[in-house]
Length: 293
Image 1 (spheres, rainbow, N blue to C red):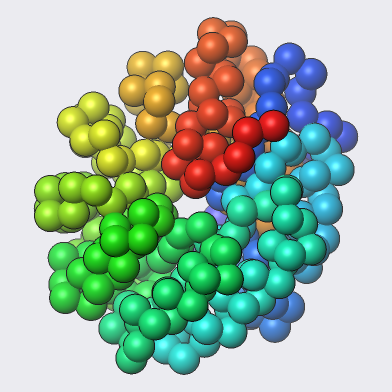
Image 2 (image 1 turned 90 degrees about the horizontal axis):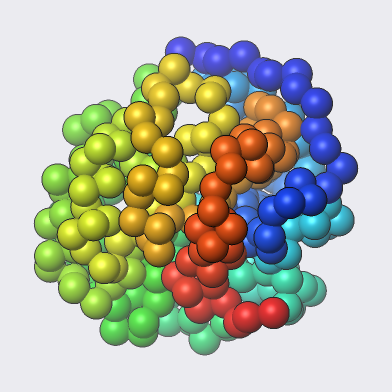
């Protein structure tokens, strides 16, 4: 189901009362891929509000007070991951203290371990994958290669393996591939691998809430889960979650509303200052091994 844009007002800066904000979920792509993504979203998801190139994305957020950016890409087909990783490494060289870049790989493509080894040697800090786009079985042998590469190198893995949003435009059914139960099997099999599941695991909120209590190697980010945009609503306050295992992420620029919509929501919830510091910066710095200010 295609959703509509939200014409909400955007602020010029991070709300004054908030501490440092590390945005742990930002997308960057070469221009050609960005244009293809915008077209896909226009047809099957929602209108993307911020149609910016990668450097414009980075400059936009930094100029509005975001303290550090974690940048993601994902390879939607075999054979392009190396190029994407080189592109990401180039962006990191342009902004050496302001962004943390994540590598990608297409699970099952030849030389996956070598692709990741080269990416880590170029300074990329972990791996980002998207099950809806890449259609991988998180419990299959292709993914075991990725898990082992990350675990052996001490690199974190961000995987969109929550079931939503579902779309007939995907080449697989996310509800068949993705579940908290499948992820728990990975957590048990790779006990030293740090994993982040974006979007608070939408729509299995309660199950993921239990998993972060059970496993010290699991984190969740909040991207798009706090915007009151989807019909699925978060059934608890953020401070009812394990507060050292959740982190802020915006999903910028692939959003249909103001860049600070969720920050304004957070600012209005009267959270404890210590909780805000952990949620908005410290937890992301720990997960992604980002140096302190």
